[in-house]
Amino acid sequence: MVIEDNSGCISDTLKNIVTIGSYPEPDFTHDSLCLGTPLQLLDASKVAVGTIGKWKWSFGGGRTSTWQNPNAPYTAPGTYPVTLEATSVEGCGATITRPVTVYPSPVISATAAHACIGEQTILEARNMTPGIAIAEWTWNINNHETISRQNTGYQFAQRGKYPVVAQALSEDGCLAKPVALEATVTDIGLNAGRDTIIARGQPLKLHAETYGDNLQYQWWPTTGLSDANSPGLIAVPDKDQLYRLTVRSPEGCVQEDEVMVKVYTGPEFYVPTAFTPNNDGVNDRFRVIAPGVPQLAFVRVWDRWGGSYSRRAPFPTPGTVK
Figure 1 (spheres, helix red, strand yellow):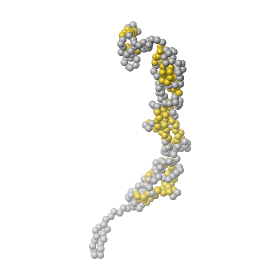
Figure 2 (cartoon, one colour):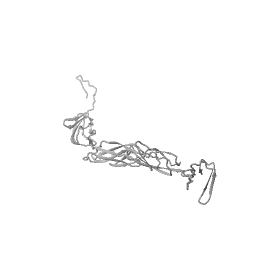
Figure 3 (cartoon, helix red, strand yellow):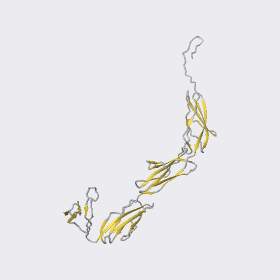
Figure 4 (cartoon, rainbow, N blue to C red):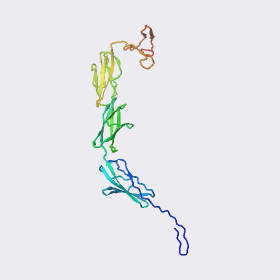
């Protein structure tokens, strides 16, 4: 633009850019719209020339929003008409109406059964909304392992309490509220004690090692026992006796162990019939057990071919021959 006055003087030239905007192409998208979660609609409008600067959403019933990406206000499942009017900065506007469907979210329950060590923890999930079809079930085990199954089992290696979470996804793409559980695995850890030798008439204290409280103990046979239902007791057997201990936890877990008590009436020798000196750490040494004998002075061993080996005290270990 140039201005010339009555005297013939001409102004400087003024230049400006005029944008002839095109009409927007309103559009929107959304993920699965599930009750109980934000029902967010995402603007996807385009304009060839210009810039979109205003959005007006109409959800029906006089409910509107001017946010670019609003949350729909629906509180019940169903299909609703949604209108989006997009207006550019240049003042050009266009409108689109499209139906959107809001789906109900499934509700689930789950249980994690108690397990004894060595057994599987049974994990079961149930759909509390039968009218909503479930497409996928998932269990998260101890925050590091996932199993895609409605009902399953998992064996934990050690006793303790472990977090497990059940999840479900409907065929409409709606997630159920996760159900967090605690799986408990019980290990009594029973150890009735080491085999031993006592003199006849000598009292022997037996004490079982266990984990947990409120355990039930049962020693058998009860012969020579001060209390067959206690973890610690006094035994006075009059002959060689194998004691078997059964322990039951309040959860119903049962473990058993044995302890052998050999009874001697005076000096006596117990000699193994074989040993394996192959340096594997198992039965590598030949040991002569001599209860009632304070010291061995001489030991001789014959092999099956009549060859013999003898040694006089002192021995490397009392009653031991390499």
